[in-house]
Image 1 (tube, helix red, strand yellow):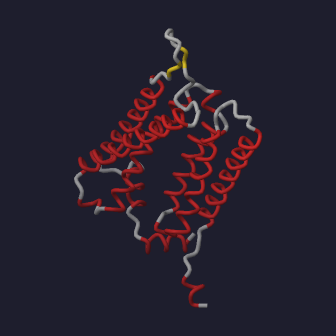
Image 2 (tube, helix red, strand yellow; image 1 turned 60 degrees about the vertical axis):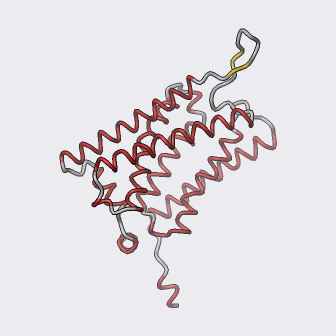
Image 3 (spheres, one colour; image 1 turned 180 degrees about the horizontal axis):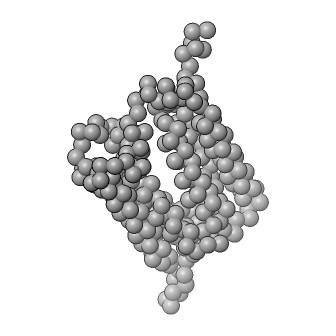
Amino acid sequence: MEEAKQKTPISGFRLALLIVSGALAMFSLAYFIYIAASGNDPYNKFMTTLLETLMFLVPIAAHLIFKNKITDFTIAFYVIFLFVASFLGQVLRFNTHFPWYDKFAHFTFGYVGCVIGLFVVCKLADYDSLRPVFVAIFVFCVSMMCAAVWEIMEFISSRFLGQTAQGAPQLTESGKYVVDITDTMLDIISNLGGAVLFLAHYIAHKVSKKSLLMGAIVKDFNQKPETAKETAEQA
């Protein structure tokens, strides 16, 4: 009985997020199984749907492992971004139907990559004791690192798994098929734009000494487990 009382309650909002994330994971998994069984994959979504399934299971795993050490805002931010950028863009093929959508997703990911860097800073260091310049440089580097890792994954999937994440091979005058790296560079530049937008947001927050939503994000990331537990209990 005592152990049951000590269990941290789950908020209704978090439960809804986990249900949505699980449902999207099941949808991606079903699509992956369909492609694997039928061999019908005209848009080369075989690896994408498998990766999507794993990424949508991350919030569930994070909750089971870390409980309220990961706040509702963090999980919501992750699920919403993954839904917009990856599920709509890749699984439902928004990138194919709307040519601008892929670059929009990479631009957004540039901002999100900085948010990831900010999360790491808040969890591994005393944020209040850090110089803003250090935080800005760190989060920018994390964002660009994420962009580089993503493009490496696209290269590997195209080079060794027969996917077309970097674009379909083009026949050259020499008779060889090559992949144009323009798309890769435009993706990285789009990510750079999103990172610069975050830095502008962060600098405005620091110079004006107003929250501008950035303060709320920092406060959420700096929550201690006890505070997060109290928030969940109030919900």
